[in-house]
Length: 159
Image 1 (cartoon, rainbow, N blue to C red):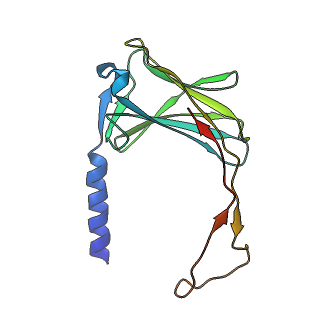
Image 2 (cartoon, rainbow, N blue to C red; image 1 turned 180 degrees about the horizontal axis):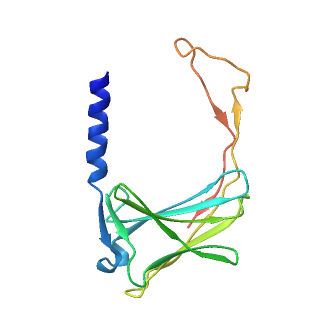
């Protein structure tokens, strides 16, 4: 078992080390894939995160913003420059807003001097979901019981 864990950690490390960073000034906007998420914590704030990848969603080549290139997140009149974060070769950008209500609209702009960029990608926060089954006080046996989860279905939109 211990050898299996060591092998899994080694494989994961190799995969993470395979990440590459490219300066944004070397890539046109048409070659960039944006992964934009908004996560509400239920305590009054939403974290907007964006990673930019060269080529597509599964690429391990991350865009490192350089020069005049920047990401800006907006909620209503509140506009924030997104802050760069890095971990093990991955690069992403984030901004936090003091709102987590359903139907709240956010926008992320990829602003550039080299071409038109992508000035407004928008999304709307869905209603929070809640588990409706099983009841909170229900107990199960992992060996003999099937566990079925039911939840309210959130709705939202991305453009």
